[in-house]
Length: 265
Image: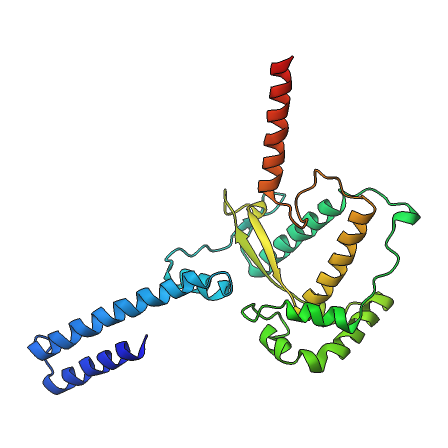
């Protein structure tokens, strides 16, 4: 609501309190003016959301969800034995098992490394942590610890050193703080039967500081794997610059080259 729209709405209410008649000419005129201005304010608000989607996606999708009438409920789910699980705790356990199986499946795609190929150490310093703080987006949601990214951004100069020491201590001791192990898991429905747990994609919302630590470890791992050529060039998923589109374009290019070679022969 803009200032002008609010002013016209209040004027409409004031006129109604005066005449107590929705058919009074003065009220009809005020109501039309308020409705027109409110409609223009709504359109302007939606245009602003669409224009700022690159820097504020959260507000855009929050508004879209508020306007949507579709509400996808989770469950009841069916386990591997075909038993229907309708209790919330049972459904949570099923989705947690699905997430664990997906992680183990991803780990199974890597071969065993030699000692020379193993990553022996990850260097974490205040400068690196500060760069990660600069990449935080204030519109992101906080994790189970209720620490907002906006707070972390505002206090990055004060907390950079202690956060660095916590990360270094966690890496050296191989102990993850208990708060970092907590997550708000939301199963996102994909397609197919809603009673099948495999038709949901679990999304975990963890601590923002834990995410910074994961980013540092991930960057070190990917740099190490790229440097030692431990990832095939055909692997596009979860790699910088890679996607389903790049994979399809490379496949299409290979098919085209093969067709041209066959035609020349």
